[in-house]
Length: 317
Ligand code: GRG
Image (cartoon, rainbow, N blue to C red; front, side, top):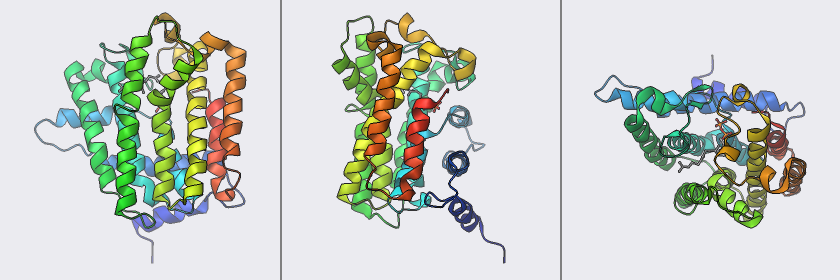
């Protein structure tokens, strides 16, 4: 008898499971991206109803591609502690919805005023500022509904509530939003390395940490595993940002699908500006070593997390 949809998905994901001998990162990423995109497709459905343009605007940015790093980290962390991708799929969708909202709002004229994102005109260029703002608001709010409906075989309701609270912390006034506020306030101001690290830990690092810790929790992580994932996620989040700073200096707009060389133009403090390009590269690699080192006690099921850490500092996108 042919297997059903979910059973087919489970079989396909298991064929390239993290602990298997012939583990192939590119194949793993492709499968998990597809898995997350199918779930996102079900989470934000375009209906033929009054106001459907709002849903269209939400889907426009959500389906524009992107690396899907945060959802993959959540799923890989869940798998690293023995969980199943299905246990973390709600968190994975919520993370990408929140990340996408932050990009839509960041591109608005009142923030970075950008015309290009993920290789496409930005949301407000297509739908107008009001609709883009609302699309971001709706993605943020709906993300918590998707997460609240999570069912994990390895985490009870109390654990799921803790994941909800941590994601709220990471996205809100203790995390990404305060990071963005500090970023705006520090434009053109002298900034030292400690301040820069503090800012990045909130603006981008917090969501990375919530991805890894949340995925671990939903996969049934014990306290020692959660501590290791915390160290991994903190180092990886900063490594990602250092690489992002370097790409802004080194890459072209065509390559990244977004405007580059803008940090300098906006008078933003960055790692290359503060310590130079070579030292920034070395620092990013040091952080990746630290992230991988934190996973020393994990078995082969953490291989995707190790390989993703290297990918984060080598990426050209
Ligand atoms: C508006 C509350 C609010 C926050 C905005 C995310 C953010 C905070 C600003 C975006 C500006 C920026 C370039 C931040 C640096 C790092 C970053 C988040 C890059 C984009 O993330 P990727 O590379 O993007 O994961 P894709 O498109 O692959 O998903």
